[in-house]
Length: 621
Ligand code: SPV
Ligand code: MN
Image 1 (cartoon, protein in one colour):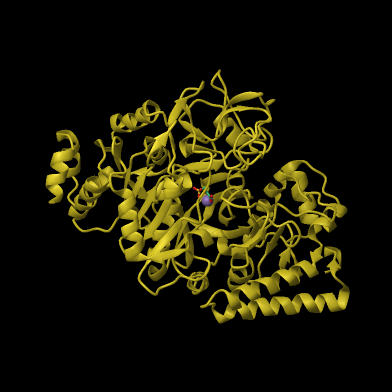
Image 2: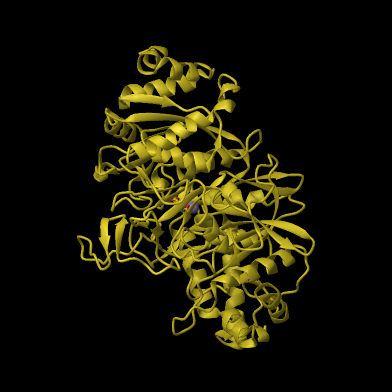
């Protein structure tokens, strides 16, 4: 059927007019097609007006997807008990017959996948209201901007996007007729008690050819919020031939002596990424996704988003003062999968207040000690429980956040959950060395941010493996290329907040990251010395002693330094061998330099071991 006929038939006159003001006909065709297929009971087109935005917010509460809490603007949302994290198994790329992105990347033949998806989508929104939203990835009016259209029958998803992305109905109105845009179709499917129930038909299908992502029978944000991890896959495909990067990175400002330097940082989920970008005394540009482009020999970065969908577990007044303050003030915040109690308060694992004995959480009615169907005791909140807010609620929001130019990146940080190998902070020898031995060698012990077993060491290059829409080899090659010809390449660092001693005790406090940031800031200006280890440059004891005292008012002892910065040669050798094996056996298109640099690193480690032994104190480097 003609798109215009569908839209005239199914939309109210005022909603039709809102769409008619957008001239790009492809927008009309796309929307009409999925209205016809998904068959919603009604359709709402949201412009950028306050009235439309509050309509969406109101519907989230009226439809029962969110409930109001005691503090003004706060609501709580629940996802189904088995819908609490990204579903990697059912997330697939739709690829032409015979094409593969490699063993680590899930895919299905495009025609087959599309027909399965279209079957699931048929009539899926019956009885539901469909929300149509226009947003922009990256700041508005910028080289980085990517326009997007989201269709969703979840007011919670549409509301979350309001907090997380820049509104762009105005941008679409002024857009030329055939400009490209990203498309997202989401349906939560059949609901019981306001949660998706047809979980066996949960699918996230990414159609690279059509720049479209489909998501069905799920509500969890990582599976449903189109502009978040779903758009990342489309953006990686787009940026690859265009010579820029889409990274799973925060962007933050670190204050140095009379200056501010910007860092980007990639960490797998639940490894301290948001809490790093939110440390006291520094500024935040973004906590999750960055686009990076080269200009004038420098790297510029922007936050793709304007809000935070952050992990709430462990947020307490001492370690996360800035987040804690925002979560305890009035303002629009969606809490998800936490415990809520009668007086409208919320609780989570690791909150400082004494936990109540009962309330409502991700399992429904909860009392302390309750077990699930598998016999596991249910925590007070889910480990992947989150908060969603617009960064305007944060006092540490960097003033350059909306700058269409982006900020100049001086340093890039890679970190994972590693109990026994990497030192707490280390600088690489060069861009190539950093990309290969830090970013491309990133591993992390698994967490609750994805479904499946926790605590297993997993290869996760640049913490971006879950989102790659190109082969791993190509992606590493793009990163290597990106650094070439830069007059001011960012320095590349690794951090490890999770190092333990032989008896399993943590070797660092959570706040120590504030010192590592200051040290890295000094290094990007050559204002601190370093020791050369086989794997990179590590801090001098004197500098750390001074920084611990200045930043944290703490005494840093020689014993602390030795236990944290001892080079652990056997573990590093094993790791290097493990990574070489992965790039040799599992990645078909590994750039040769990856293996060369890893072998050089292995040789340096082995030479030091032969000369000096297996565990080398930094004082003996
Ligand atoms: C992550 O898991 O990396 C997140 C949350 O940032 S999600 O939206 O699930 O990706
Ligand atoms: Mn993330």
